[in-house]
Length: 371
Length: 221
Image (cartoon, rainbow over the protein chains, first blue to last red):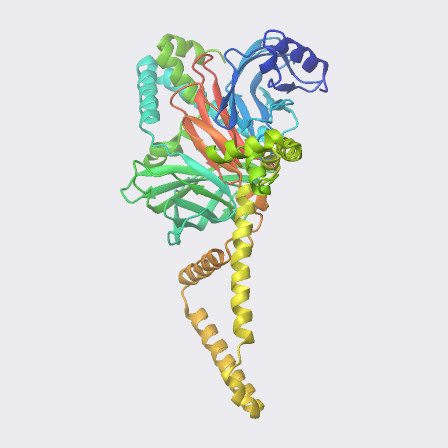
C-alpha cells in the first residue's frame, strides 16, 4: 500500500468485521497527493458464502470521501479490479453531477459481487484505486487509465448545457413550464426501450445464422463538426458486429476523438440504442477517415423472439477537438423525434428529474439556483 | 494366500467397489499387511493429488483447451484422409508415358480456372463478394474447429473468452466461469455499451441521489 491514508483506511475496515470476511476485504489505494481522502468505509451486509463449487462474495461498501483540495469536485471515477478472479477484465464506479466544495464530504457506494472458485480464498480479491477527479474549472487529477478525464468532462459539458436549458425554461415559463418539462423527461425515461447486451471481443460469437451487411442511415445534426459519409455493419440474427464508418471533419479545427451513436431497428419497427462506436484519431480539417469497431454485440432475445435487426441509424454523439474542447449535440438536436425516442437523458437531467419526482418543485428550483 | 487383483485394491482405496466386493476385499486386507500397505499408499496418493484439479482449473482455460483439442482432432482426421488418398495407386499412372501432355493439360485447366475465377469475382457486386468471403470464413472456422485469425486489432485468444454483459439489473465481466458484477443501487438504470470494449449501467442512487455509472472493461484498456 503506497499511501499513509490507505494504511489508516485499511486499519479502519478491519476492526468491525469478523476475521473470515476480513480476508476478503478490498484494498483501497489512494495516491499520497490525492485530492480526496478516505474518511470511513461501511461494509454493512457484506458476506461471503459457498454457492455450489464456487464462493460468492457479496460486497457492499459505502465509502465516505473528503475533498482535500481547494476546488469544487464535479466528478470522480474509482477503478475496481479483482485480478485473482477476472484478470481479463476490470470495473469502475463513476459519480458525476457532483458539487462538493473544499473540505466537504461525499459518499461513494460500491455494490460488487464476485464469483470465484472455493479454494481461491486467500489474499485480497478486490483493489479499489482512484482513476480521476474532475474539478469545476475542468482541471483533472488522476492516472486516467480508463479515459476518465474525457468521460467526466463530457458529462460536465452535458450537465452545464442542461442546467442552462432548465434555468431558461424556469425564467421564461415559470414553474408550470418547468414541471411540464420534468414530466416529459420522466415519461421519456420510462418509455425508452432498453436491451440487455453482451460484448464479445473480436470476431462473431457462435452463431450459425447467415450474415448480411446492413448500411447505416445517418441523422443529420446541423452543427456537428463531423459529417458521416457512409457506413455498414455485419448483422447475423441477434448479433451485430464490425461497424465500419466513413467520417469527414467539416470543422476548421483538428479532431482527436469522436463517438457515433448506433441505433438498431428490428422487424417490428422498434428502435434501440445499441451502443456507441468511438474512435481516437487525428483528423485534420476537411480530412476523411474510416473508423472501425472490433467487438461483437449480442442481444438476448426479447420475450423469446429473435431481435431480427433490419436497419441501423448512426448519429454523431460527441467530438473532442485537439485543443481539448468538446462538441456535444444541442437540446434542439436531441429533440429530433428519433433521438428523443432512444437516447437517454444526460446524467444531470436524470438527477434533476429524480429531485423533482422525490422532493417536488421547490427542491428542484432550489437546486437549479445553487450554481 | 491369494491376493485380490491390483484393480480391486485400487477401487477399494478410492471407495469405488460394490458392497459385496468391498466386504470381501476388506476382509482380506484386514488380515494381509502387504495389501493393507498397498491400500494405505494409494489413499495417501489420492489425498495428495485431489487438490490438483482445482489448481489446474485455476490456471487453465478449459473452453480454449477443449476448442484446441477438437480442432487438432479434426485437423488430424483431415490429414489422415489426405495421406490415405495420396498413398492409393492412382489411375493416372497410365498417363506416365506422356508426361508433357499431362502437364500441358493441367496448365491449361489451371489457367482457365484462374481466368474464370477472376472474371467471376470482378463481376460480383461488392455486397455479394463480402457475403461470399464471410461464408468461406465461416466454413473454414466450422471445418477446423477454431478461429485461425481475428480482425485487426482484436485481442488475444485468451481475451476472447472474456465477456462483458450489461442489463439494467447488473453489469458483469465473465471469464472462465468466474465473474465480477457491479450492481446498481436503484431501479430504472440505463444500459450503454461501447465498441471500444466497455459496458455500463447508469442510475440515480436511491439513497444518495447521486448519478452513478458502473462500468466493466477489457483489462488492456
